[in-house]
Length: 154
Image 1 (cartoon, rainbow, N blue to C red):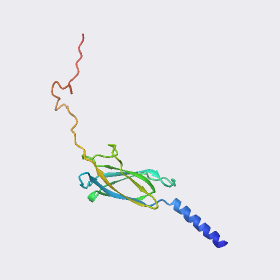
Image 2 (image 1 turned 120 degrees about the vertical axis):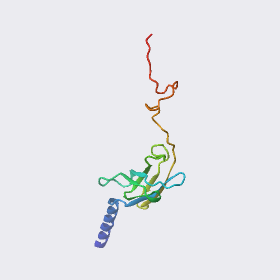
Image 3 (image 1 turned 90 degrees about the vertical axis):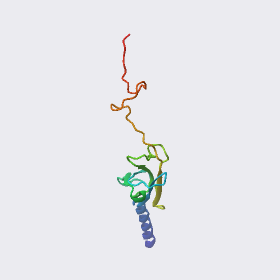
Image 4 (image 1 turned 90 degrees about the horizontal axis):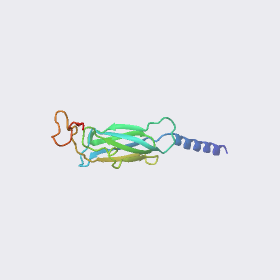
């Protein structure tokens, strides 16, 4: 009877320990342009959308990293849950899917699947000059752009 009680306590404690300990998950991948080029120096933001296990203590829900060689990135030590990945490449024409309403890359970490991989492909945009007309480059006459409004009395 004592052996049965010890076995029961050991199993119960093991189950409780597994519920309390967060998963040590990893999300890795690469950031590429639609033309296949690796995007080096892009920022990948990771956001925990939905927890799988209840919150035990104050837990981080946002991470960020910069892509390295071959556009590679990796997040480690992640708890179980569903994540969104938002890539951003400042000062470039690559479009951020999180800002342009494109499908957002996602990944899920669980005890049965503690690692996930994501190849993120960005669409190219176009650089459009802004600030025209400016004081140095006024609009052509008759275009209605930048012309001062005049008021007349009747």
